Image 1 (cartoon, rainbow, N blue to C red):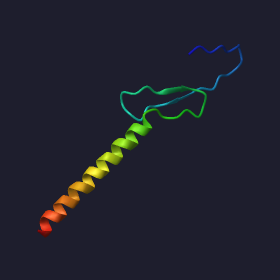
Image 2 (image 1 turned 60 degrees about the vertical axis):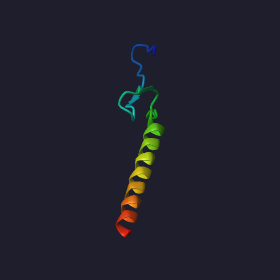
Image 3 (image 1 turned 180 degrees about the vertical axis):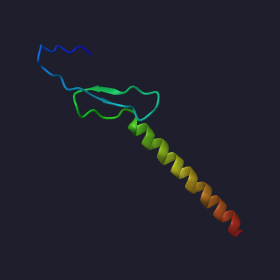
Length: 64
Protein backbone atom coordinates (compact mmCIF):
# COMPACT_ATOMS: atom_id res chain seq x y z
CA UNK A 1 0.00 0.00 0.00
CA UNK A 2 1.50 3.33 -1.04
CA UNK A 3 0.59 6.43 0.92
CA UNK A 4 1.81 9.90 0.01
CA UNK A 5 1.95 12.23 3.00
CA UNK A 6 3.38 15.73 2.79
CA UNK A 7 5.55 17.19 5.55
CA UNK A 8 3.49 18.06 8.61
CA UNK A 9 0.46 15.97 7.57
CA UNK A 10 -0.78 12.86 9.34
CA UNK A 11 -2.24 9.72 7.77
CA UNK A 12 -4.51 7.67 10.01
CA UNK A 13 -4.34 3.95 9.36
CA UNK A 14 -5.60 1.04 11.39
CA UNK A 15 -4.69 -2.65 11.53
CA UNK A 16 -7.21 -5.34 12.42
CA UNK A 17 -5.81 -8.75 13.26
CA UNK A 18 -7.44 -11.74 11.52
CA UNK A 19 -9.95 -13.95 13.34
CA UNK A 20 -8.24 -17.07 11.93
CA UNK A 21 -4.55 -17.56 12.69
CA UNK A 22 -3.24 -17.94 9.13
CA UNK A 23 -5.54 -15.40 7.44
CA UNK A 24 -4.32 -11.96 6.41
CA UNK A 25 -5.06 -8.96 8.58
CA UNK A 26 -6.68 -5.75 7.34
CA UNK A 27 -4.69 -2.53 7.02
CA UNK A 28 -6.23 0.74 5.90
CA UNK A 29 -8.52 3.52 7.01
CA UNK A 30 -9.85 3.25 10.59
CA UNK A 31 -12.84 0.93 10.90
CA UNK A 32 -11.28 -2.17 9.31
CA UNK A 33 -13.16 -5.44 9.73
CA UNK A 34 -11.56 -8.64 10.96
CA UNK A 35 -10.99 -11.18 8.16
CA UNK A 36 -12.04 -14.78 8.64
CA UNK A 37 -14.86 -14.04 11.08
CA UNK A 38 -17.55 -15.88 9.06
CA UNK A 39 -15.32 -18.97 9.00
CA UNK A 40 -14.92 -18.87 12.77
CA UNK A 41 -18.68 -18.48 13.23
CA UNK A 42 -19.41 -21.51 11.01
CA UNK A 43 -16.81 -23.65 12.79
CA UNK A 44 -18.24 -22.66 16.18
CA UNK A 45 -21.77 -23.50 15.04
CA UNK A 46 -20.61 -26.93 13.80
CA UNK A 47 -18.85 -27.61 17.11
CA UNK A 48 -22.00 -26.68 19.06
CA UNK A 49 -24.19 -28.95 16.89
CA UNK A 50 -21.77 -31.87 17.34
CA UNK A 51 -21.62 -31.33 21.11
CA UNK A 52 -25.42 -31.16 21.45
CA UNK A 53 -25.81 -34.29 19.27
CA UNK A 54 -23.29 -36.17 21.42
CA UNK A 55 -25.12 -35.15 24.60
CA UNK A 56 -28.43 -36.29 23.14
CA UNK A 57 -26.94 -39.66 22.16
CA UNK A 58 -25.58 -40.13 25.68
CA UNK A 59 -28.91 -39.12 27.20
CA UNK A 60 -30.87 -41.56 25.03
CA UNK A 61 -28.34 -44.35 25.72
CA UNK A 62 -28.71 -43.84 29.48
CA UNK A 63 -32.52 -43.92 29.30
CA UNK A 64 -32.57 -47.26 27.47
